[in-house]
Image (cartoon, rainbow, N blue to C red; front, side, top):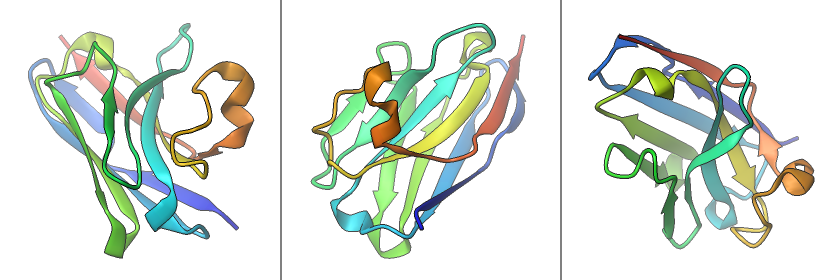
Length: 126
């Protein structure tokens, strides 16, 4: 059974840094695209960053240059380093696995094609 377990969330002040980690199991991690999504209160879920099995990267415009996604295939883990955090980064962050390795569109009607973690809360105070 596919499982994703996030860790590393917490509270920081504006300008601070956090690193989120996600441990994956029950899937062939090496051929799975991995990503981090977030959902802020009252807002739609959004893709923050993703990395395919070949290492192709994708970032939301709002985090590009501040966040870095990376994967460790031997450990079946994906990380999200977040720097220069802003209050608008406050959200529940979800680790997501895409068995299609980046082919499935990242629009709401396809959310069921992905595997989702339970989420970890990141709070950035001003």
